[in-house]
Length: 516
Ligand SMILES: O=C1CCCN[C@@H]1CCCn1cnc2cc(F)c(F)cc2c1=O
Ligand SMILES: [Mg+2]
Image (cartoon, rainbow, N blue to C red):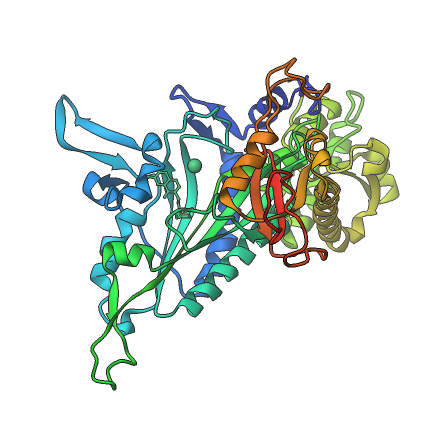
């Protein structure tokens, strides 16, 4: 078993491929853009699902299941909605040998599968609010370079779809869901995100507005959309004729119909890839304890050939007691009694899999009544090590796991904060991007202006009087979000837009970056 033989900072693509395969998260598959989620990554998805599902159930969201196939009539109910996405819709055109009369689409998202049902189920305001969610898979036949978890042709997600009587009620839910998305990343995956609203250019065309959480990959300096929560307004209810009698109009004798107010929100298995890219190091995966299938691995050490069978049995018995103690306080524990493998080999193997905490226990430890601990999140081997009294394990180890969780988040949050550079001078824009940063700049929020910023910040071909450090052409920066948390300094009608060619005043600080 060999470890990772490429450094994260040298070749991220190769590093990522080795980390996810040697860490047994992903196995490759013979359909392009599709990957096998091995048990280790599926377990992470299950813990995300368990937590988020319990949260939405407090809002009385109910899970349901709609068909994976969508008729062309439904999918293309409104040209505008689909035209921007038509290139990535997968179609079934044959059943066995015979052509289908009318091809059916494989769902890329379920609005058009669900909303005719909404129209049927929602007749009276008493049928509101209707709140459904699906834990399912969707297919988007992307042609951009695929990357396991980050961009695949099929992925798992949850998609929530709700209908409300009022815009206000819908608006409250959109934000609550976004806050829980941020919690999935920050509290479970120990990954920092920025909450904000998408600009007109970047929002979902079918939405009134899109709120988003934006992640960051320090290794490439690129932003990444982490999850989205859309307020659809009445756009889809007008398209699918989802109306109720206005409960207030009755008294006035008018039997007015109002279109319901809808939301839709989604978080995908991309979250697992962001976690791996954020925390992984040159020894492999580093899994945050909150989502680790195995939080602690206990490994007997100092087992030598000259050890008597009784001494070995005694040591193994003590190892089992250590494991049982931890299991009794809810820690997820593995023991590694594999014969014929050295402790060093075992350490490497569990480090590849990113187990947050290792406990070593040998005759010397038994003498002293201690165990030796080794934290996976600390690179320096000496600083990673500690000693805990065997009698104190039940208190100390859960605390140590919480400390690891918090330290992993704080380390990633610091890296994101340090690479989120606030600037007001256009001259600094591209060099700062090239320094693997995202930038927070005053912007007019105009769509054309945003397109221009994207073009002006794309590194052109080599030799095209491009920045000397440019190894290759790089995409332009697009707007990631308008952060809810706005710094001071934008004076209405005074502060210039960052784009030197733009005559308009800045409306807000907007986060721009090269992105996935
Ligand atoms: O992003 C979400 C959250 C979960 C529910 N859906 C919304 C909007 C999805 C936006 N979107 C995103 N991608 C799409 C790809 C397609 F091929 C297609 F036909 C439609 C879409 C499409 O509508
Ligand atoms: Mg897309």
